[in-house]
Image 1 (cartoon, rainbow, N blue to C red):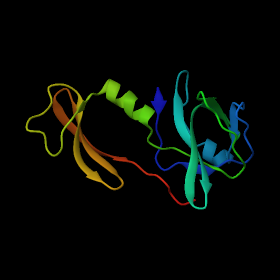
Image 2: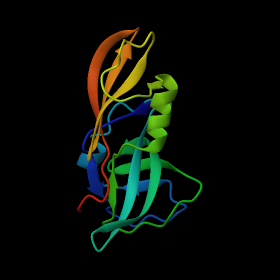
Image 3: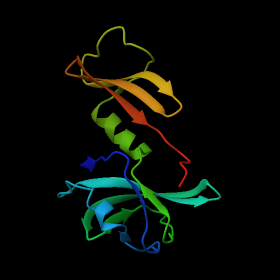
Length: 155
C-alpha cells in the first residue's frame, strides 16, 4: 500500500547511477519514512534544479530504509543523479490514480447538491497551490482535505 508523508524533502548524499537500486540521504530523513512493511512504499520524486528551475524528474518507490539508504524501485527510464540533487515527497499522478481507483472522483465544482451515494471525492475549490476536496464515506460527509500541488519550489 502506498504511504504518504507531509513536507518531506532532502538532498542526495551521493551520486546515483540509473542502474542503482538504493539512494543515500541523511539517516534522520530516511528515519521519517516509517511504517514500511511487506508491500508498502512511499513514492518520492527526484528533481534536477538548473538556475532555479526544475529540468528533470524521476519518481521512485521506496520500499525500505536502513541507515540513510533508501531501497528504491525505479521506472522504465531511470536517470543518473548527482550528490546534492533534490528528493521529496510530492503528490504524483500515480498516487491520484490509486486514490481515484479506490474512491471515484465525483466531477464537479462547489458544494454537491446531495451527498454521493457511496464513497467519493468532490472538488470544492481550486487555488494556485492545490485543490480542496470533500471526502464522503458510506454516503455521508467525512472530511475536507487539501491536496497540495507544488512545482518549481526553490531549493
